[in-house]
Image (cartoon, rainbow, N blue to C red):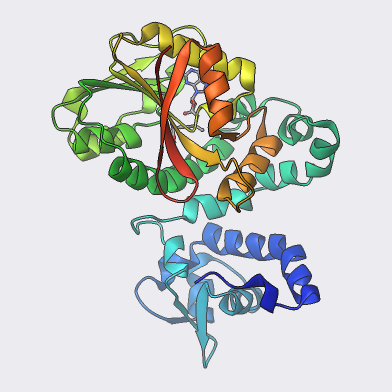
Length: 340
Ligand SMILES: C[S@@+](CC[C@H](N)C(=O)[O-])C[C@H]1O[C@@H](n2cnc3c(N)ncnc32)[C@H](O)[C@@H]1O
């Protein structure tokens, strides 16, 4: 049950809100150290944990007791800690692990960008470019270690997205699914597993495509899938029945997003579909996780989350017509379009 915020005294609530970034940083440090992996076999004393992760025992204890209070670990006598159900999500190999995401939110490149949110709100310009002196995609090309942190976070998050999308949207009518900007192929692997008659095309930037395909091999669907490198601003592979854009459109401002969607419309057959999979802003005033993701987009680059109506307008500019929004989990949805 969600906490009823009205029962928490306002000063307490404000202190919780203003110290949220310190708690977040503490979770991130525990994730980076790999504390949860050490506890996966059962409770351990803090000195053992410190030994295993390479930390100062006294400082690690100060970190872990804070995380005990917020429910990530459970402390018992003798400075011993165990995993809680929440803490288990920091284990590297658990289904649905969020360790990669937790590492990202405390990593210097991400946190440095968020420190400049004030300037983004004043100017409307992305913080990331200002703080790091280059666009995010260029930055990650030049910083492979940070790219690895970003990839880990994307894998974490896409684990949540994939399960929800494949269970809420029926891909079985499509003969060929083109995953545009499909990363290493985790979503496409799940789609092809759920649709044994379908073929797939994983389309990515050439340097990403060169290293992609691991999830397709792991799922045993590699023989039904082609991996192609290219630039979605120039052209996307033709011949698809569905063009899947998972967390792509929200990376871009309207003009760039229209250009990508236009390339998909040009490649699409008469009966094909464009499927945009991301967190959709509510049209009304209700709370939504998509609002915080939208702020993340403001910090990180030119992108934004959108309402169903805003997708409708983007599609129209690209010669497409929005047919329906299929809600998945939380604010996640599949926004479907056909040729106008
Ligand atoms: C936010 S990630 C989304 C990855 C994946 N679809 C998912 O949902 O996890 C954006 C992806 O777009 C790819 N991308 C960026 N610019 C591209 C371009 N011009 N052409 C093709 N892919 C591109 C990136 O390499 C990256 O994998």
